[in-house]
Image (cartoon, rainbow, N blue to C red):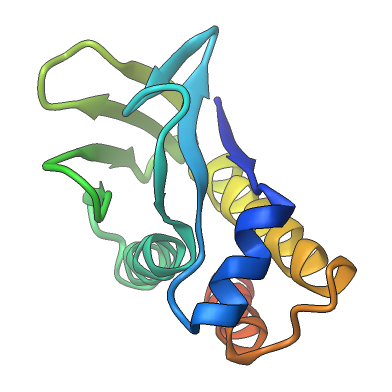
Length: 143
């Protein structure tokens, strides 16, 4: 299972110029299947914040179910956690996407995505408040 992210440098420039949320490709992938689809554009920093908060809360409170909502569209994934084994099952409502992993792997996928976006913002000299937000998301996942 992988969290796939792709950012178009041209759209990054427009984002900073217009002062809006960064729109980029973000989707969960497992063995060539994507959720919600490939490519899927969404306000990635916003949803990474939601997901980071959800995972952090689940780990702290030993919650059994976490949802990964997407902003665009009525899409979300449900992650069921078995705390005895630390294994998770992630599935879509329609049953077309299902994968198994570990809670630590999901956490690492989110951290990697956050670090990737942060590097992209720095590489393209697009330093702004989003980097502080990304740092806070990473702290949620590492403390």
